[in-house]
Amino acid sequence: MDGVRTRIGGVAIGAALLLAPLCSHAQSMEGWKITKTGMSLIATPANLGAGEVFTMTVEPPINLLGKDPKEWLAARAAEEAGTLGTVTDATPVAPLGEPGRGAWLLVRTVKLPTGGERLLGYFLAPRTDGTIMFARILSSPEPAIYKKYLPEVIRSFLSAAAKDKSPSTSSGERPVAKTTKRKPRNKSSSENYTKVGIGANRKDVAGIYLRLAPQMGFGGMIMMNYQPTVMFKDGTYYEDYDVPLPDFDRQAARVARPTAWGKWRKQGGMFQEYDSKDGWEKAEWLGPVPGGKPGEKLTGRYTSFTGGGDTAMGGGNAYGVSGGMVFSPDGRFTTDTSVGLTAESADMRTTASSRSGKEGTYVLDGYMLVMKFSDGRVERRAFVFMDTDGKRDGFYVDGTPYTKKK
Image 1 (cartoon, rainbow, N blue to C red):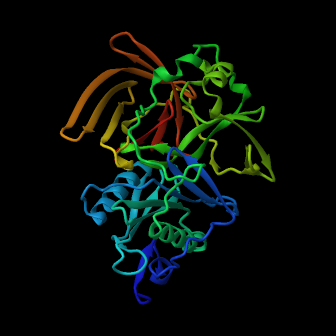
Image 2 (cartoon, rainbow, N blue to C red; image 1 turned 180 degrees about the vertical axis):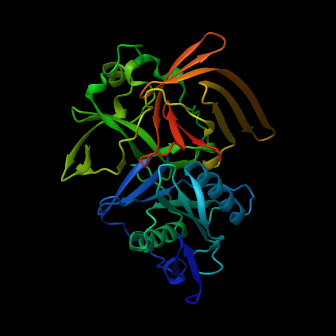
């Protein structure tokens, strides 16, 4: 295997780094910060440098229900990578660890809508109970970064799979996948802190930045995506941008969504955020990202995809919401939404979908998109571009990312 070469992010590296047999004993990941999101665990090195990104997300055991592991892994990677950006480099599914053990990996290099690249690595390993263990790596594309951390995370991943260890609860017990009802965020969820025209003062805002955060995708899978964060000059931040600033009632939002708030500061030119357990830590934020300029117009079709469910944890329920917006320079727009639902029980599988479309005129007003529909409705929506380099290839509306179709 030492003669095999795997190309990652345009850089050839030895297979000894990724595919060599690894220690079969579980080893602690000292110096890593471990956080829990839903039933998944996210590990991040504590010693990342400025601008460096590396996270490992480990999901609960997954039942593939007879699907081929290699095909499942390839499909999962294709779906997730497409939501993050444009795939520019890809490797085929390859063995992970000792040949014949049934563990697999593949790697994708993705160009972000904001510019720059990220490396996505996907690991799969069988467990003795018939389920599989799945993990995802999100890394900066520089070899010096991913070569530094990959050996340890692969060793820990394979060792945990061999011992049937999975993301555990605080009590140390293995979580059991169960059906939960999760709904995509929608406009109604923000009504409790929306007050038209009497919201936050723009002078109180330091800027809107993009922060990497875990979010739910189709079937309940956890993905790392950038989301807009409103940073206030008083040292607080709101980890979402789902209500336009002129309509955002800060005090009401603190009551309605107390866990969505945090503290930030700058030290030595670097952003830091406060963690109640670990104190001040470096924050990987991009920005500030711009709003619309006076009189600015959009051109082309922009699309989004959100979802939820529990198929990623062995359940049978999943839903996806695909949205589209088409803008023209004359100030008109059309929207369409497609909703798909799959529900499975012991004796029945149901798939339903619906589609709707609307049209009207629009105006960009800084960090707000005002949409006047032909039926008389007017919607004021939170808006911010996702670029930091002057491009207009994507934006967020009420916190949901939309990217331009080429």
